[in-house]
Length: 109
Image (tube, rainbow, N blue to C red; front, side, top):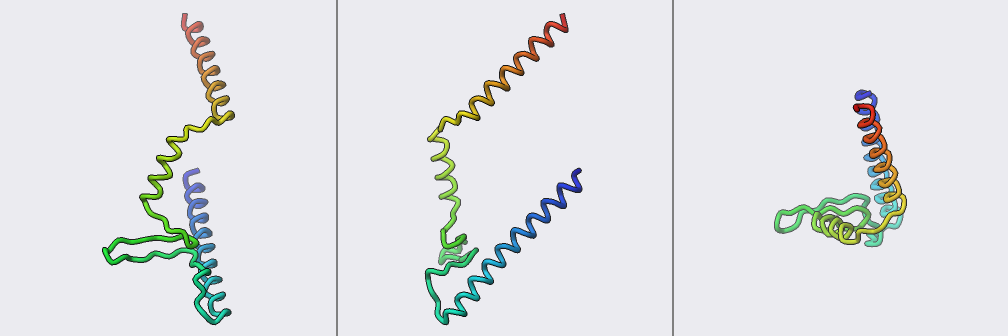
């Protein structure tokens, strides 16, 4: 099972990078076809180094930083949105756990 999971994960990673390489190749071909560099055509994945020596990554023209990820995580934690299915699932699992605990106590007596 572990071997199968490893193979599937490896295959997914190869296909993911294949898609990124294909998008990058299509972008370069579109630039060649236009004959000039259009700033509206972004690279699929670009990693640049700043003057300070830090690295910046951008995916499809959107800059991605660890600060953005921390900000989004904090924003999601602050939202505490109510999810009906999640709450219902928690109540059902608590009920089932309580029922089994009660059953096990009765059997143990």
